[in-house]
Length: 132
Image 1 (cartoon, rainbow, N blue to C red):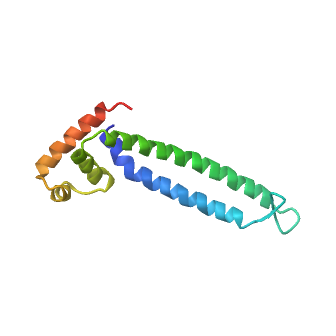
Image 2: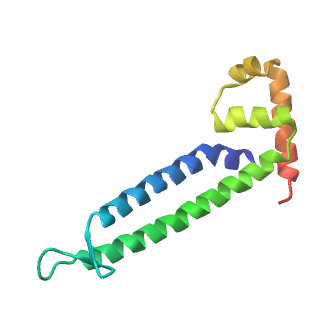
Image 3: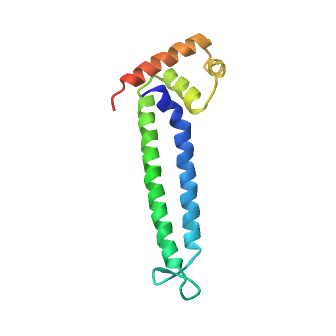
């Protein structure tokens, strides 16, 4: 596990949440259509409601696959973080996941900024050596 992957954590989590909202919105729209005999029905001849329902289902499936991939990446990062000592986990989470600055972390822990940097370096080394 490297710094770049850890930095992605917040973006991955945000994207997974956005996909979740998008899937819910699409499903709500699909459910607002009229269902007759297990199929979407429109209100006039030649209506493409059934086709649109199928397209919405396809889009939802694609988004769910993307969301699953993102969640797997988050699990991979979490497993690497879990291999750390308590204080190391805290530093990594405060810096990469919560986005705090070094000075803010030092106040929360409380250690000097230099000690926080050392803890961070030790944690990164352990995470690089982490085997899934």
